[in-house]
Image 1: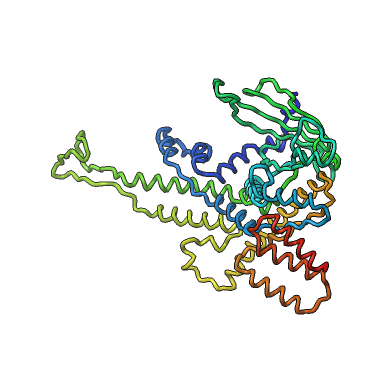
Image 2: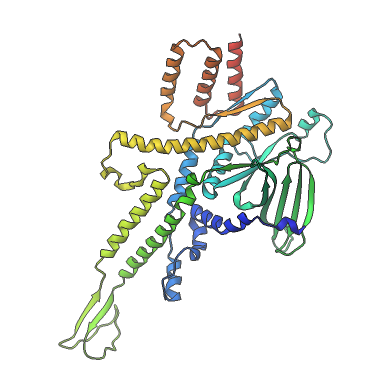
Length: 460
């Protein structure tokens, strides 16, 4: 059982980095709880001063907003999922699956939006295909559908939950270990919640589930094992959504965010301390009087009294540097148009230049869209094969990011039809794509019915 606890060298090397990246993305109280790991203590700074600075920390979370913007913009229009084949029962299943893919009411697009967020934070994310387990093995497909055994669902996993793995020469997984932890209280009468650690092992044909209740060092027991749903395909039922190093936004901006965090807090501390001016007494006599709002001081004829106050030159330098750091965070995330912020109105920029800047952002979005569509297609295809539906599933879309451009698409489609291209398939697929984009918020079964009606109209 102890072998299940072994950790891959890459996991051990990245564990601390992944925690830091989650803290930077989430921000808020989670970041404040770990602020001591990121707020740099000055050389010989008294501990009580550093502690007070820690209590006053704040975090301007630019990268979290940038990642959320990319994920929200990408799925602003749902992908077009085309299901072809004569199995009506299978199509009905996929209609329900796209509406609720994890048995928790999560839409298929929303599920992958969260997976994209995790990928932009940690570089990659994972999901597994599961099928409900029943007490008795169904004898027929009808019985399997009746008891819900064929109702596939998805489970999300983050990169910091994948503790060990092995890949073959073609890059596919040979086996993988997933670890999750939770606090669980079985009954109300229990003394308190217990820490439950669970490991799930998958290889190309079998799975095993291991559990440990309590602190590390306790007994680990095997609670379940058997063949998984993709055993017939000789495939590990875990899929990866990965972004390239150049498009891993958190990895590119984390150091800039930490630098901005330390300098902004240092500036805020200096400004706060500057509000409490320090009295200065110019006198040759020993000064023992108490100075305060409710006291007075007595000075000699040659004595002088004043207050120290910083001139503020370094403050302006710090403010300019913070603006530059913020702009650099947006720039390396391919969002130059948002970099200037409140100063955008003062920046002279032509319309062509603005369009070019946003076109770069659109190209990055299309790359993310291709990665998401590819993973979606793999998942849906694997489920269809496991269910033996005999359906062909194709995912398209996620390449237009301006809601107001649908009229342009209609004009382009009309011009294409006016060319007189003799292809009924072209016309049919064009009508399907336009209908799917216009009704992007409709329920999956409505979209499927429209596709079927378009197919039927061309068949007549």
